[in-house]
Every structure is written in structure tokens, then in C-alpha cells.
Image (cartoon, rainbow, N blue to C red):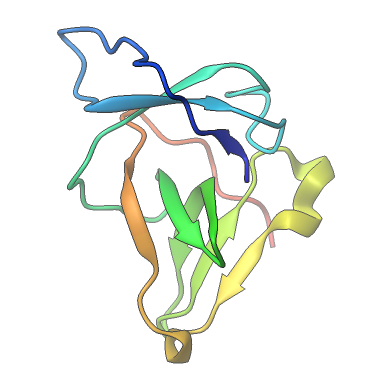
Amino acid sequence: MNVIPEREHIAVAEDSAADFALVMADDAMAPLFPRGSSVQIQRRAVLRDGDLGLFFVDGRVLLRQYCEDYSGAVYLFVLNRRLSRLDMRIPRSQGPVCCFGRVPLDSPPPLPEA
């Protein structure tokens, strides 16, 4: 799990597009969101390739960078490329990926190089 389930409310700015916020439990999304940083999430947002989203995969809640290929497979990338072993590929045959929302950013970080 790379986000900390918080029992107390984390404030979201009134002028933010976000609906709620979480705290990062690890450095998978560093340097943009290092361990302990607050991440704001916008519900019901459509994800495009490169967007950061909050996903539920294999019983874990993960913040990852989203990408879908031509076959419908979903890739969930960490931003911290030293931890690239945590990247995931979810084949279309496994069914839809559960996404709680996206991180509202002016522009998403670049996708990892192949």
C-alpha cells in the first residue's frame, strides 16, 4: 500500500478541483510526491495516458501513472524509476481497473521511456 489510510480529514483547498487527499506512505511517486506528502484526488475524472490516478489493485490502494496500450492492457507506473520493479501491467483479460480518481495537475509528468 503506498498511501496511508487516514482516519482524520486532510484539508483540501476550496479552490482546488480535488475532492479528498491522502498521504504517501512510500517514495514510489517521488520526487513529485515523496513519503509523507499530501496528494489531492479528484473523483469521477476521466484518465488519459500520463495522468496520475488512485487505483485499487490486488487489495492495495496505489497512486500510479496511468497508460493504456492498443490492446487494452493498462500500465501503472511509479515515478521513482529506481523502484520501476513496482510498475504493473494489467491485461485487458483481467477485467477493468478500479480507479478512485485522478490527481489534478496542470500537466502530467512524462511517461517512462520504453
